[in-house]
Length: 164
Image 1 (cartoon, rainbow, N blue to C red):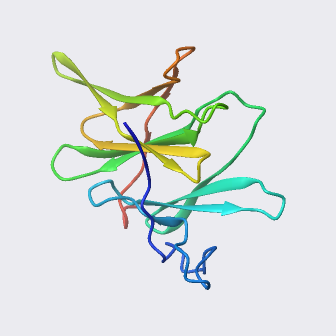
Image 2: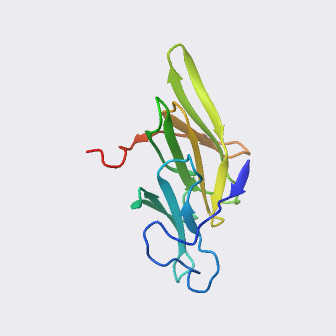
């Protein structure tokens, strides 16, 4: 399932966002409750090149720039502690050249069994995507719905706020 991210008018970094002064909704905001410590902001340069900024606990973590030259859909994937033995997990990247959002599956291992979850994919600014889940996952698999080569990444561990 694909949907468009809802965004708040207050960017995570406190700088005014595009559209903020005119009253139009700004294309940035926190992810839904329970999605972890991440938020996003989409920006467009004067040359028409779009970018998505990814924040974690309000600090800039990654910038993804729209590119026509790379076929890669998956840019990054992270996990951070959640309540109990669970984890918040997040994956992000660029939409396919045809604008189609990828199929995203988080995978993991537990004693005597494998776990997997198909994630809901949310598009950002019509050029990028995000997917998140909560569970004992340690990797993500991304694939164009029409087929092709699947991309995989292990989830990068992120310490909680205040951890050294």
